[in-house]
Amino acid sequence: MLKWWRLNSVISYQLSVISYQFKNPSFIFTYTDKNRWILSDWNSSEINDLIQGLKKIEKYTWGQIKKHGSTKPGSSVGTGYKLISIHPSLPENIPKDIKFSEMRIDEKKRIFGFREDAVYYIVWFDRDHSVCPE
Picture 1: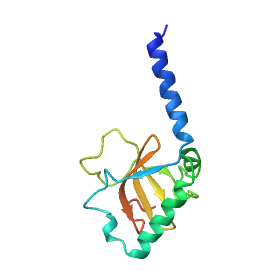
Picture 2 (picture 1 turned 30 degrees about the vertical axis):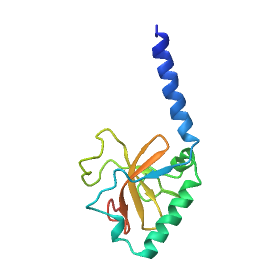
Picture 3 (picture 1 turned 135 degrees about the vertical axis):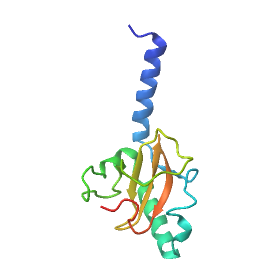
Picture 4 (picture 1 turned 45 degrees about the vertical axis):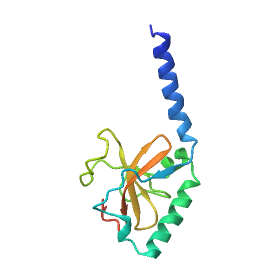
């Protein structure tokens, strides 16, 4: 028999998982890599594309974003959100228990990072689809 406090924590966890599905993403740069796939390598036109892409993604909820993804290489649509298990080594400051993912900005540009609740921590800015080419 579950103790009331255990049952309460299980219910709270389930509600938090459900609630983030209805939230729009926020993009945070706390874990952005300073050495590889950095934003300062992008030209002004590419940065404009990035901003427009992030504005587009912000209009979706996490539930909608996850539906735009795919588990099959090359078959993503929309934001192309997908979890990535094979990737270059992550910077030292990245928490070990994260689920690394990618989102499409446009045909070639991607952002890579991880999500905690409704927040997406951007680690890499990929301007030419070179981080995890398919």
